[in-house]
Amino acid sequence: TGAFTYDPGFTSTAACESAITYIDGDQGVLLHRGYPIDQLAENSSFLEVAYLLLNEELPTRDELDKFGYTISRHTMLHEQLATFYRGFRRDAHPMAIMCGVVGALSAFYHDSTDITDPKQRMIASHRLIAKMPTIAAMAYKYSVGQPFMYPLNELSYTGNFLRMTFGVPAETYEVNPIVERAMERIFILHADHEQNASTSTVRLAGSSGANPFACIAAGIACLWGPAHGGANEAALNMLREIGRVDRIPEFIARAKDKEDPFRLMGFGHRVYKNFDPRAKVMKATAEEVLNELGVTDPIFDVARELEQIALKDEYFIEKKLYPNVDFYSGVILSAIGFPTSMFTALFALARTVGWVAQWNEMISDPEQKIGRPRQLYTGSPQRDYVPLDQR
Ligand code: CMC
Image (cartoon, rainbow, N blue to C red; front, side, top):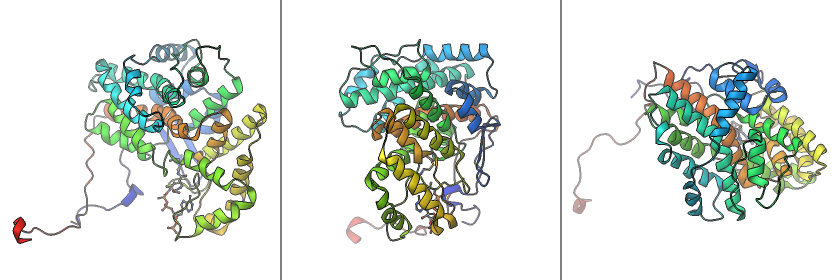
């Protein structure tokens, strides 16, 4: 059994070659197609980043307009899918609905499931990017008992999403530009992160030739876990539970206690051992948005203080634990009005861009093979079957 290298958690195994995203965890560097994440978050739009991830280069004005038009043409969901939502309990977690609805897209869009055809692959990619805001917003609407809102394509990608989430048919919805910009930034910061667990899941599912809708549904399922995308929801629930600055030391002590399963959610990262560059932008954005919206939320003070205390604490210094992308995102999403249960669905919406870019890259690779990890067998040696009455 010694023929394979055993690498639990894949801490030192490169599973693919990729030209999409570069991370230097020691230096806190994250580049998309070579462009630093903070520059993209500051200057770019989410659709521009989506184009960049999919097509290798930043678009010209003309290319961006065409891309925006194409995406806008795919924003509606097949009407029959509304019935699918109605089969869920009203209190279903939005991520449970997302896993189901995105997987079900393969039953509706048969003309974009042939993965051997590059045109169909691109249509499926556009459909997924375009429909995720509609799907996520409908999950929210279903949970609050309000009517589903159809997309309005004169709005931006993010403006459209905000209207489908917070608008109602009886009233005109004015997109708040501060909220729109903050959402764009959150989406950009989540767009891709090379071979994280959900992206690796999408690649592994895709390696068997499964259709793209099924593969992205697999990614969504993986993202849901609290060690991954579910951390944004868990982090905000934690901040609310802490509630007050004077209760922080108690929670820091619990996080350090090896007998206690509690961890500081939104802290630590497999790859970043210096800082997570996304967390820096996220913190600055939280500051800006709360100021501009005039929202005061004690959990922002708790978050800032918790970060300060942890960064000076020997345990966190020694283990190189820093706030990650999920630590401050919840503060912003909460100020905008999203319930915590929607946080991971928003992560899924944004990461869909990275998933489809990575999936396309893999399928286009002539060296691509089905992913088939091996194992070190630790079970019983061969033995003979014992009839039931002799056991
Ligand atoms: N609080 C307290 N201790 C921690 C934490 C934390 N958040 N994270 C890691 N540690 C400790 C851990 O107990 C371990 O200690 P020891 O060496 O004594 O056993 C050491 O640090 C290394 O941790 P690990 O679990 O072996 O590291 P990993 O690379 O397998 O896990 C992680 C990375 C992100 C899963 C982990 O840091 C964690 O659970 N963080 C909280 C959840 C979270 O915020 N996840 C979001 C990650 S970023 C966005 C995303 O990917 O979706």
